[in-house]
Length: 483
Image (cartoon, rainbow, N blue to C red; front, side, top):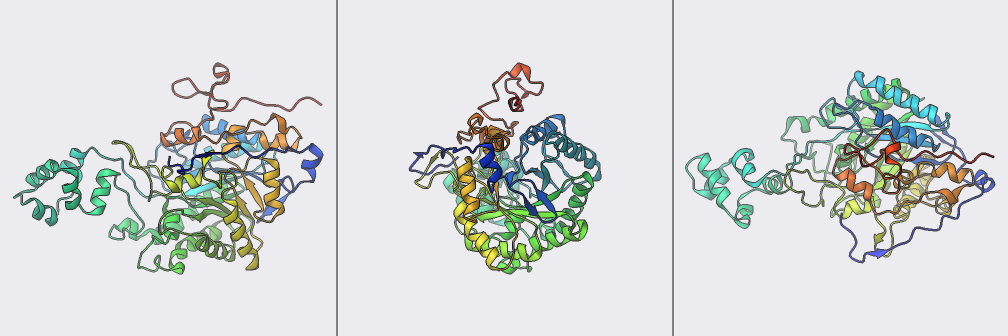
């Protein structure tokens, strides 16, 4: 992952853990309404992809154990990982693109309800993504994958396509780059990647016609499975975020202008709302900043937030960066990963940072977005996350009106019980995240995600282990001491 050139090592903020009485009086542990759903506290575990589903997208016992373990920490809400709305192969990622997935998801809901004693609300994140291919071997790409054009023939002077291919193989990279188009060069050196602007492709051109129905059907299944609500995934490198981005230059009314870029995200939400009704929570996760050259800024996010609040979304969860646009070149045989460039760092900053540091890095943008939503007359709750790992830090964010709900992914992974420990006045027992992104490195390799602080503890005692048997897949159990 890219890191700021300063590489200043930052220590986590002091925990300043509350007593049980102080926690009971705090904003963090006070209730809040998210549309029709009441959270018992303002603590939130954002969506994380743990790579535990079956290869065909079904809930497995490792998936159930993953969410059950977070639920034992009794946060106000948990958001289930990005779950595909299409019924297409996507590896060990959850899917909700067909009714056959509902039974497994209903079991997941029941496990969370039971493990949290009914304290935790459960949302599921719905995602669509376009095709991305692995970086091919150079000769394989040129001899088999590249579609030969008149430009290639003219550049090589070869008489037939096979001769053109061999001439291209023989070129050095400088010469080859001059012959190939920018997208062909990208397909060779990064792996081919579809964009929402590829309207020459019928399935991309038809996205505005197809996606509202797909999202609505997925939301219907989520409601049938018993989830308290859905979070529409409008963030990072994926389809809906790409529609919102200033890089979206579609000329069919779904790009180019701010209004055009907002059109499909609002239509998707309206289709979902029509399907599930107003008594079901629907919100979205979107980017406060894209953190790429020419990408979306806080000003864009302010406009998006106002539009989403006006449309009637029940919550707005903010993230940053995580784009393909500045991803590092993958190895041959691997796909580009959208968290390796500067935008990826801004999404998941580490303890090695610039002067701003990694803790609460997203808060200034959240402050501006929330203020703009309130000024427009809406009380839509704003969820902020990113390096929030201490009680005083979270409480101050809420007290200053910078957000309404505090999310913590990596800290919750480090200690799934940390919210509960704070609430019980046992903050000294919290296992604190080191923010080295050990977990992110596993995600990049599509390995089951764990935390270095606990994945080698009593491995033999854990029934669920990594395929090599060396790591436990859930954090060790914890119970509060007897009174």
